[in-house]
Image 1 (cartoon, rainbow, N blue to C red):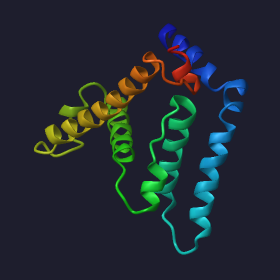
Image 2 (cartoon, helix red, strand yellow):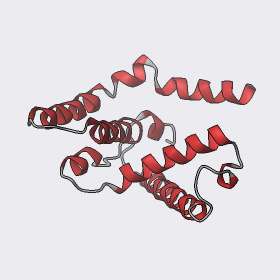
Image 3 (cartoon, rainbow, N blue to C red):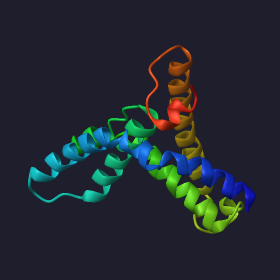
Image 4 (cartoon, rainbow, N blue to C red):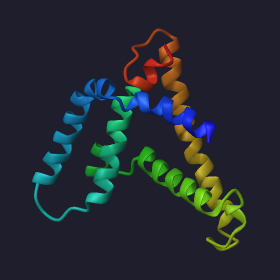
Length: 153
């Protein structure tokens, strides 16, 4: 209802033509990095690469933050942010589909449920800590870039 309309209005500003035009350089740079990886040849699993690419683009455009997810994924390294994003996405989907009592329902064996939600909470804390660091950098006079970060200034 009303709350959704309010949130949509705020988020729509982030995806306006003017806002996205300012991100085209970062999007292009990330896309070139992805294309170079794909041109290397061989068989590639695109899912983790595209997931990492999108995380890097969002980090650069919206928050002015380098996650380094694509470079880490391409190098065969585990990127904490990529793993946390996948886990948070999974947790949000399960919560939306199964409702607020998702942790009580049978989508995971009983013994695994507390461990799963602890991992989701750890992932949330990783992103919350990063967001606090970005906001702290801005408040201390650091450079603000990206439409989300600029809204704090």
